[in-house]
Image 1 (cartoon, rainbow, N blue to C red):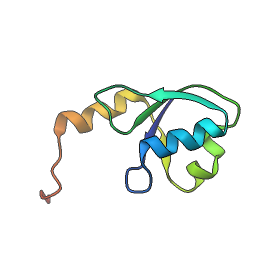
Image 2: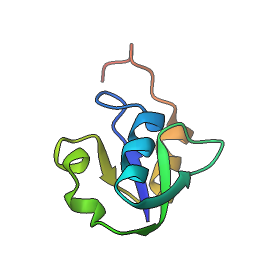
Image 3: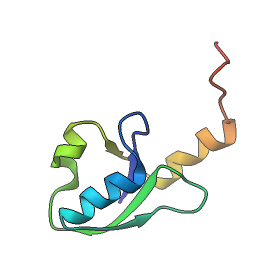
Image 4: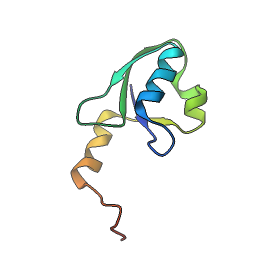
Length: 79
């Protein structure tokens, strides 16, 4: 399972530490992603943690990160 960190509300390092303290076995997704975490095993439901309910992360497939990277949207562009 892959988690996408909401960078507006949390930093990946801080979120990873909080989830590890809750019994989640995880690692950064890959070197190409600054917001992804891959979960190997969890003692708690990852869709019901206080961090999840506060919007610090969302459940998302790793391949869903790629279109955003490929399109490379710029903050200054308004459609």
